[in-house]
Amino acid sequence: MPPRLLDQVIGQDDAVEVAKKAATQKRHMILIGEPGTGKSMLARAMTDFLPKEQLQDILAYPNTEDPNEPKIRVVPGGKGKEIVAAQKLEAAQRKEQRTIFVVIAAVAIMAFVAYIVLITPDHNPMAILVGLAVIVILWFGVRLGSSRTENGTGVAKLLVTHSGDERPPFIDATGAHAGALLGDVKHDPFQSGGLETPPHERVEVGAIHKANGGVLFVDEINLLKIESQHSLLTALQERKFPIVGQSERSAGAMVKTEPVPCDFVLVAAGNIDSVQAMHPALRSRIRGYGYEVYVKTTMADTLDNRMKIVRFIAQEVLKDKKIPHFDMPAVLEVVREAQRRAGRSGQLTLRLRELGGLVRVAGDIASSEGARFVTNAHVVRAKRSSRSLEQQIADRYIERRAEYRMFSTEGAAVGIVNGLAAINAQSGMSEFSGIVLPIVAEVTPAQTRDGGVVVATGKLGEIAREAVQNVSALIKKYTGEDISKHDIHIQFVGTSEGVEGDSASVSIATAVISALEGVPVDQSVAMTGSLSVRGQVLPVGGVTAKVEAAADSGLKRVLIPEDNRADLVLESRYVGQIEIIPVRTLRDVLKYALVGQTAQKESLLERLAAMVHATSRTVEASPGAGLTVPAGRSAGS
Image (cartoon, rainbow, N blue to C red; front, side):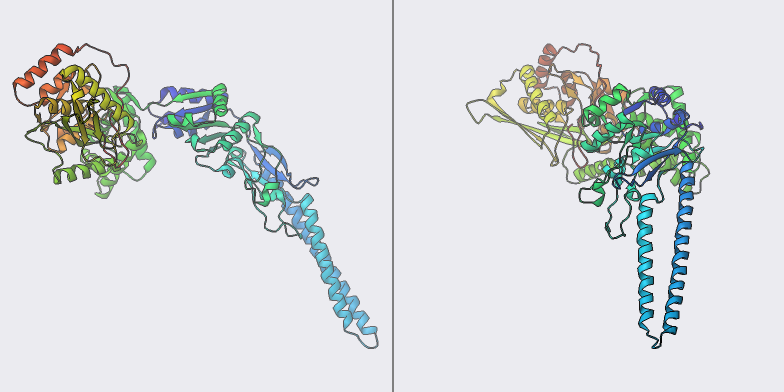
């Protein structure tokens, strides 16, 4: 395992180079990418490459001219403790001197009072009470005077301290509220009468001040309030920022210190939507004086990169310190899982936090059995034990739908298609979770003279509704039917939580054409794919998970876009269990999905063959997430 943290970052070579440059030149950075791709690790590792500068201690002193504006003093790292210790010693000596003075004065007063009592003829005891009263008044006077003196020249408060050989600080301010980020002044319930706490002692530094000379990391930067982002911008520009009370109802609201040093390198992180919610001026400042980096989620599946995955496994074992090492078959199984989670052919996932979870679960299983090494069997069992919530929900879906026969896996039916869906593919998890989602179409005579309508039910999202409209246009063109004479009803069965995405297009078209032409659909066939208005089947995401869901549901064949053929990375238990048929056009889909060699089917295929131009094309954009919904929601086929 490399000794430097930055060298332990896997697969982010471009981002690593930028991070080195940014740290060396003290530039700010924005790291955008999916969770678990190494953003915080990159930020933490930048402290190793910051210029060698002496760290500073920061102290707050009382201000005799304006107590509500404490003075700030900066000294070399390690000196602050010495100064405060010396001041505390001096204050203790002064207090001891005052105590000795009060004791001597009290003894003298009592001796004088005793003398007076003894020499007076009547020995009046009132003199003793007067003497005690004088002693009490003297004590209060000395205490009040010492309190006022300490408020002017008392002990400084050490706000930030470092040792002489300490590394530059790394401060994670993710989720910090205004006080924790920018500093605050505590409330003082006793604000008068000599019982008040001096304002400088109530000052608390924020993360921006603790990060002085180091790195400040803020993940999910968009979650900071816009006021906090503006203050952060000011701190970046001025490299110092005063501490004020954050609560208007607090006694600290009247306190504002002199500017406190906060010369740090800001690393802001988040997802792509985080950029849209950032303060425009803050982003402009970072862009103008730093870098914006989009962190990769996959890397090429080469021998060198596979060895990086092997090194990652070793790093996780060493960091955990509680699990055994992996043998070669176990390592190969983890590498195969990295291929599978990439979701694209020739790629390995860089969502390594989740892959690390699989490594630790496999290690726990091996440890519980007392095994010396983690084996392939442990990893296979770990994949089952470490399934995401979405995958567990998908299993429940399959069980429930099989129990209630919500879809058929044999026979034929008109207007019914077994679609394939991905549950919660936008949840931030790297794995997709597949389910079978039946789609039913029914064609009836138009109810109005204005023409027929297309009615789709199932709580469809915007993209899904647009997909239905595109399919309607396609059907008008390729079937030759005047669908204005018909009402077309499309039902997504069992989607009470809603449907979103466009990979239902192939299934919708097949169901509607089957209903229009009266040609039955083979119920042992499932399908997925987007559809262009020219009838070409376009690639989608989550194909592996969808095919595995079809196999788990007992289906015999599955139709997938031809461009997704190389993206399939099935677990060994699915190999040979289901037939996978790549398709390029709607004609191909209907050829395999519709049953028999009837005249209606042959006529339909001939019309499609004459009208569909299955031209070769280059898909520049990588496959999207396909049809996706949040947890507990089903997504179209």
